[in-house]
Length: 194
Ligand SMILES: [Fe+2]
Image 1 (cartoon, rainbow, N blue to C red):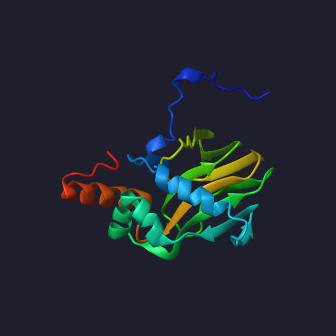
Image 2: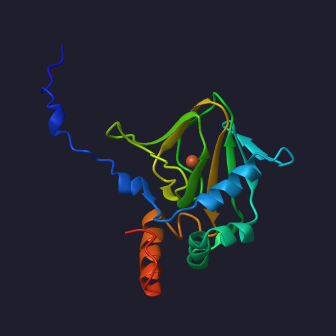
């Protein structure tokens, strides 16, 4: 039998930090959420790219900016890709395995509808996890380069999500936060993140 040192659970340092996984944007995005959910539920809407039970569909960027000055501001400092703002639908009983996104650094996400689902970040080396604690009508900067997973147990899950023109090599998560802090300071009035 291998002898091991006794583990003192309380002394284990938390290595995965919530702020390194996601940041809440300080704004009420309820008008945008209502629009995006209505669009997502339009029976005429076309969905693309079935992947891990998820499909996506683009939204009209100008409409998004008119409903959310915060999104317009973010786009002015870090442009969204051509079809870079859309809704993602996850079917009932689907699971998106633990992954990092292919080329995105940060994303901007807002959960539009969920009956019983969760999203979590994982530090694989320490077996620690952070719950992506989506609150209604709130936008989040989401670090797609921390391994994350989604489980959906009930109903369709709808998420608003953004892809930037600049990918992870040019604009990583921390670089984006730095840019956002600098640019909001220049406005003298905006306070989207601390
Ligand atoms: Fe992802």
